[in-house]
Image 1 (cartoon, rainbow, N blue to C red):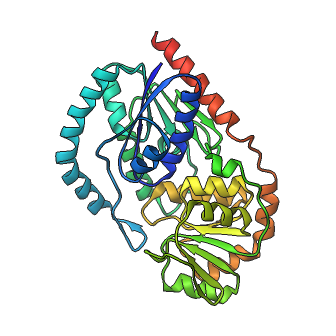
Image 2: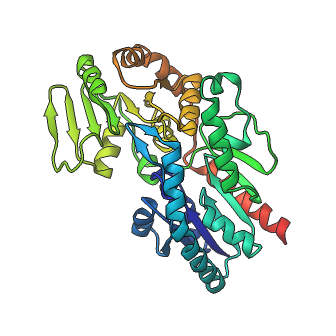
Image 3: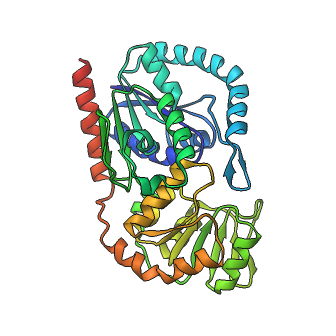
Length: 355
C-alpha cells in the first residue's frame, strides 16, 4: 500500500506523532511519502526517508496570546502564493506516486489531494476533539468565543474525512459518526525511559518577569528551556537554571523532574502524564485547544490549569502536588499498543468500505 501523509508544521507535536505512525507503516512493508511544512519538515526529514516540503499555515503570537486577525491575514497573504504552487506540486506528486490512502495530521494539503483524486483519507491527531466531541459548560465557561472560532477553523480544514482517529488523554462524549478516541501516540524517547522523582521543576516556554519572580519565590530548583534564545551553555541564577535546548537533555530532565510548568500543548502534556509528572498547564490566550486541554487535565486531577505563572497559581500547584500524584498513579497506558492498533483497524475498515 502507498500512503501519502500530510503533517501540519505548527508545533512539533504533530510531527512526533506522525513519525511514530509512519515508522509503523514502514515496518509493515508499506510505502510512505510525507509532506510537511514549518517545524515539522526538518524533524521528519531527519527521521524518515521520503519527505517533501509544502506551504503551511501558522499562528501569530504576541506576549503568549494568539492574535486571530493577524493570524488570519498572515495566512491569507502567504496562501495567495503558497497554495497555488503547492496545489500544482500536489497534483504532480499524486499522479507520480499514485497513493492508495491519504493520512492527515491536521494538514489540508493531503486532504484536498485525496478529495481531488477520490482517495480515502483518515485524520489522525488530537485537535479534531474540538469539533467531534461534546464539551460541557464547565469546559466552555469564559472561552466560548474562542471555542466558536476554533470549531469553525477545525471543521473547515478537514471537513469530510473517511474517519477521524483522535489520540487523546481525555474521554469526552463523541458526538459525530466516523470518530474513534484512542490513547496518545508517544515517541520512543519517552517510552524507553524510566521516570524518577527528582527535586526540580521542568519549565518550558517563554516566560515573563512575573513568572520568573514567582519561580524565584518558590525556592524550588527550576530547569528552564526556551526562555532565552541562543544559549550555548547553562546559566544559573539562584534556584533557576536556564538551559540551551537539547532533546536528550530535555527528556532526561523530564524523566527526573517533580513536575512540569508549560503551555497546554497536548504532546508535552501527554508525555508528562505518561511519566506520572504533575503539570501546571498554561494555555495560550485565544487558543481554545490549549484551554480545553488544561481544563480537562485539571478535571482529571493530573495537574493545575492557570492563565499565567504567578505566586498564587504556582503556590496552588505545589500545594496540590500529592493530589496530582495520586491521580496520576491510576493512569494506564501500554506504550502505543492501543493507538497503533486502533489506527491499523481503522485503515483496514476504511479501505474495505471504499473497495
